[in-house]
Length: 252
Image (cartoon, rainbow, N blue to C red; front, side, top):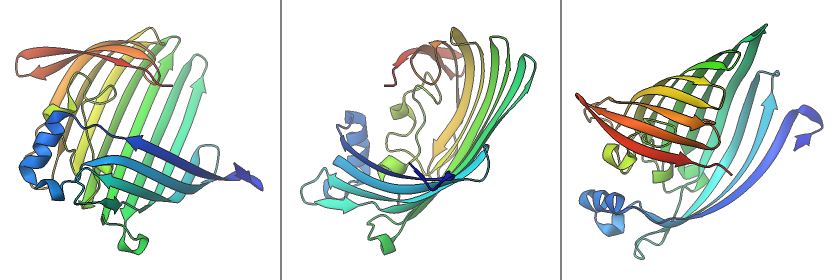
């Protein structure tokens, strides 16, 4: 909703989630912590008021507060709060010359959980991302990268993960970091013809501070829009071996 000017807008977002954890996530969590100290939760409710300001058509910033209530898995733990200040800066611009276009999309996002906000989690989360797309007729080449780090103790929903329909396609997140990580880096190279099909190469790593960094990679082919609905056949690269994985994505 705009407020007096098209440059300024405000938003109030409420969401609620019921969670059912995969057995691998529960196993890994219990291997490190006693059940009463686990970060696994049964449900998550969040309220996020925010404001956005557009400096230009290509550059805008957002700032707000995220209030999150977690009903923990263990009854002995009760509930926890994961309240944080959130902000972002985004740049997006398209340069066109005849049938050729160049699109640049880059941004920075930050979350900061604080005792001042009555949060049980105190942490700072940084995420940088960038994407460049070259298009001519129906041909499209995209290069994308992102990296992030977390300082402190972040809740599970704010930790980094790879291995889904958008990152390290072909890998399973439970083979990489079932509980997520505090460090992440990822890159992707993709060629496609409109929304008919695309081929890709992904590489990335997710880890915690002090752990060794293991870079994984994958190749594959997909059909349909990368952003909305698609069918992807990804191959995990493990030495000289390729392990297939079929993924289907639907966004409502």
